[in-house]
Image (tube, rainbow, N blue to C red; front, side, top):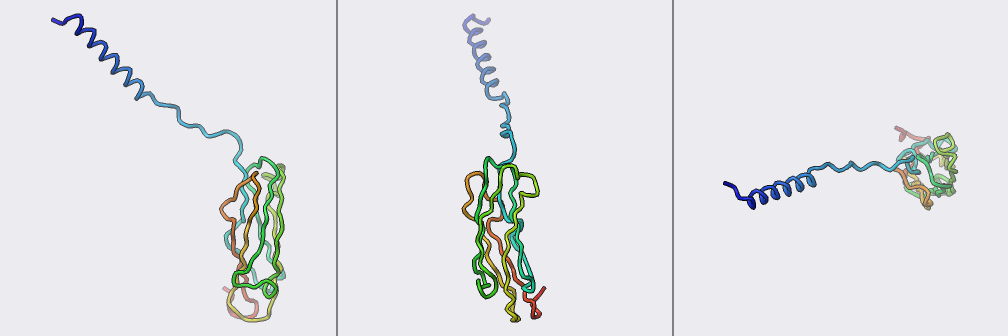
Amino acid sequence: MTSAFSTKLLRFGIGALLLVAAFWCTPSAAPQPAGGPPPAMVSFDYSKWSVSESNSTASVTVTMTGTPTGTVSVSVSTSDGTAIAGANYTANSQSLVWQPSDAGTSIATKTFTIVLVNDQQARPPLTVNLTLSGLNSNASFGPYSTSLLYIYDANGTCNP
């Protein structure tokens, strides 16, 4: 024979157990991604570029992807690797600017030009460091904020 107290205690225990089970076993909503377009990113198109020194210039592209919250600007510059500015190429630095309306259009890709010097000497390939810097807060850097330009010799057997 079960007492009234035992029955109430049993009901309380089962009720508490169901409450705990409901709390722990109820699936929560999965986190939802924030809506809206992807944020803007600026990057060189490649981590490595190559050109023959017989060309008068090398063209390197920088692309903005995503949707910026405002005007995007970044500085792009050269610096000596194994190539020496003045002897193998002309140092260059400039600002690239994108407007929000440029997103997703052909204007989203900008070209940076490096003037080459053909030194008429047979030698192994030389490198020029390429760097993106000073990006404003309307975008972030993509995968390649630095890159290398390989200048292959036009006068010897060092070309691939």
